[in-house]
Structure formats: C-alpha cells, structure tokens
Length: 86
Image (cartoon, rainbow, N blue to C red; front, side):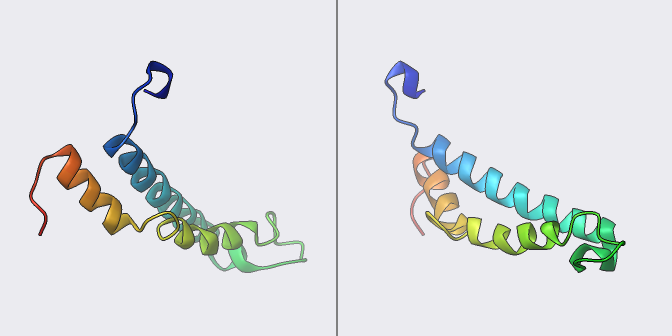
C-alpha cells in the first residue's frame, strides 16, 4: 500500500494485533511444550538457555506498546467496519 502511495490505516492496526498476539500465543505454546525446562539456565537440560522464557515475558509488552490491542480493535471496528464508537 505504501508503495502505491496509500496510507495503511486499519490495515496497520490489523497487522499489529495479529502479529503481537501471535507472538504471545506462540511463545506460550513453546513454553508449554518445553515444560519446566523452558525456564532453566546453565544446565545440560537447557537447550535454549531460558531464551523462550524471555521471549514470552517480552511478548506481553508487544500488545501494549504502540497502542494496546483493544485500541487497535477499536480502530479496526470504526475505520475498517464502519461501526459506531461505543
């Protein structure tokens, strides 16, 4: 859209919500798969050295930074779907 000179408005909000919540769900699933080993450091049982736990902790900030997911959903509803503000 930007290459065509268009301004992504609702599309940017859709991308942010999808991306930030996908990261949250993916890291949570990875930690669940890894179990208690997901948070360990410096042992022979830590294939990722707690990197997944750190990614999971940071994933929550992505749903808040640059506009919360709720704000982004409101933008999608009003600008994308034409719904009235509540």
